[in-house]
Amino acid sequence: MEQKNRLLLTLLVIALIVGAMFTSFGRGLFVLNTPRVTLPKTGSDQSGGGGSSSSHQTFETLEVTPQTVQSVIATLSRTDSCYRELTVERFWTGGSSTAQIRVWTDGGWSKVRRVVGNGSVRWDMVGPEEGWFWYEGGRSYVSVPTDELAADLAQQIPTYETILALPPESITDAGYEERGGVACIYVQSEQPEEDYVRRWWVNIQSGLLISAETEKAGELVYRMTAYSAIQSPCPSTTEFALPDGTVKHTLE
Image 1 (cartoon, one colour):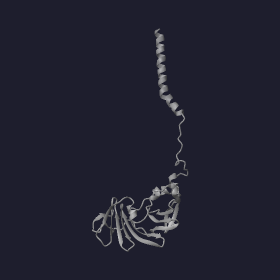
Image 2 (tube, rainbow, N blue to C red; image 1 turned 90 degrees about the vertical axis):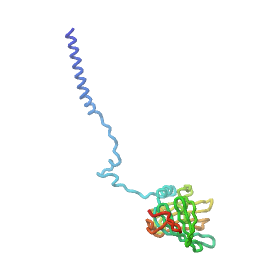
Image 3 (cartoon, rainbow, N blue to C red; image 1 turned 60 degrees about the vertical axis):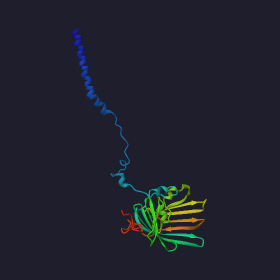
């Protein structure tokens, strides 16, 4: 009986040793023989030719159509600091008027000099929350509240951001077009119920509106042009001050 027990004990020890060896080496054998999962290569890995695909990227000009022009306009931003000159013409049966306008802008502020019909000169200064206007030669001025459209209204120009608010179906034409020798994004909108056709030309580089037209019943009633060179940044001699000398903004 004692010999039988000793034999069983020996077999048990051998079994434990074999189990330990299998645990240590057998697992490694299974790992070595398990198929590996290979992930698919990324686009840059598949480019071939020994170079990164990014080094061979090309960019195409974004197509501007009546369907895409609002998205393209939304990516533009106006030059923040500049001086420019523009002309606003109005037409009516038997007559017309022309206004020569000079505009200084800097850091959200605008100063506008406009020669009005009787030959007098009106100044408008527009800040983020308040605006002032006066006539050249006097020291009195009028203060008015402002909004995001006030600077454009002082220049007597339509703001091109209104394009973003147009019903998409009213946009009948759009594309790239040269206007006054400047590369522009062109937009045309029609309102048949009011018999109006409006057109905008936006400078691709500066983001500024350089021309606009409005037709009523097929007749031109409004035209704005700003073809002269833009000075950017705003000239260092510019003063955003009231006629009494009060400075409201200094150049950034």
